[in-house]
Length: 95
Image 1 (tube, helix red, strand yellow):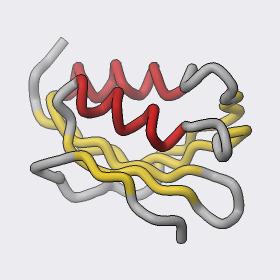
Image 2 (image 1 turned 90 degrees about the vertical axis):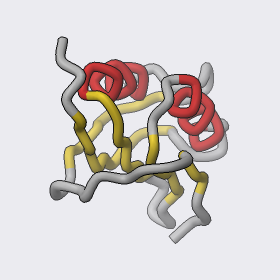
Image 3 (image 1 turned 135 degrees about the vertical axis):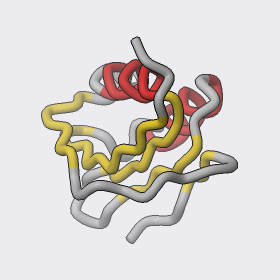
Image 4 (image 1 turned 120 degrees about the vertical axis):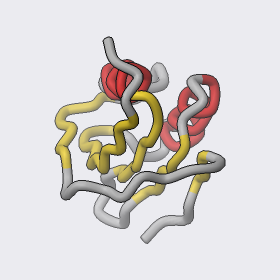
């Protein structure tokens, strides 16, 4: 594994709202020392940007498939490249 910086912009689809997915994602990202944000979309999807060491980001991407116990992830799409994010990991409001 490599420690080179990696930033990803992801769209998570499935049963990911109303099950604590955003809070779970934030807790997991903070525990891994990642920067970025997560938010709900009005269409029922969740969007996130993760930034940090590449091996840690990849580990988090794997965890996103599991999520909290009541979540059921069907698809994770890699969106356009994202600019690196530094600092905290934030939970943003729904857009």
